[in-house]
Image (cartoon, rainbow, N blue to C red; front, side, top):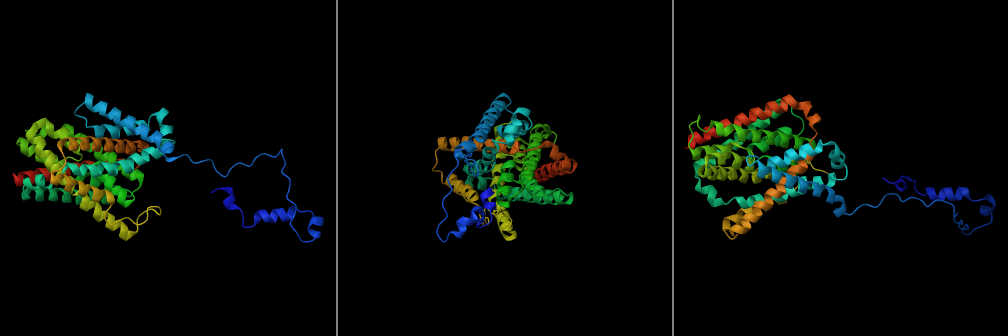
Length: 382
């Protein structure tokens, strides 16, 4: 608040009246003579410095996010087993702890990085709907649909209950449960947007889900043979049990194209459950009145969820050519990578030590829970 807002009403006039000579006040009615400006007096400073325009204010952070996406893409090219989205969030965390970048990230780059983490995340989620056609889901059969719904429900409820039982702070139980059961960091970003979650809870949940999803890339292919799964069954297991879409692709491709196709379809069925889950959480947030004063009451169905559903319908119509779908897929991955870099840049690793053992226990337990539930589901529907 500037100093002029702190002046009492009429304060300037009272001081002027007090400064008038007594003989001037006794001279009778009439306006007092205007004081002559003193040329030697310094020019008063403005109440506040000019506010930079939105482009200048956001450009440093968005530019840094773009650089992070480019680096993540190069990492993925050099190490194809590392999904670009995973590389992006790890690079964001690394940048936040690099001495010569840390002050810039916390200062001039923060507005742009925040926009990347929120606005670009929602746009990427809308485009994610173009990966899903209702016909592909129905082609898998109702047994697979029921299996996926059961895995999602068991993982969400079990992880949420465990997180609350172990006393994780804030929205961490809800966000971790959402990330594990639906689609990793994308689902966390969607739920946090409608629930007005604290940024620390968001970045902690994203870091945990990303690390455990990366662990699946290394561990699950080793269990393909010992568990006696065919390639198609392995793909369904990966699609039902691995968090992020990129991590699903990286894990399933080790068993060939049949496994990859099954994994992607099952995974996209889980993605389809993002819309009703976010809508339900938005309704709950509205009933609790949980939202910022600037944002007002949250809508019953957030706009980006409606956009996601609209993209699903558009994909189902078959009107979009393959080139347009491929371009949208690349744009969606770039937007989500920029958003995850922005989220990663807000991670403060020393603060994670406060709940380190508890959050690690929730993460590993939930990882085993979804792997076991999805494996049982695949065996039941084989």
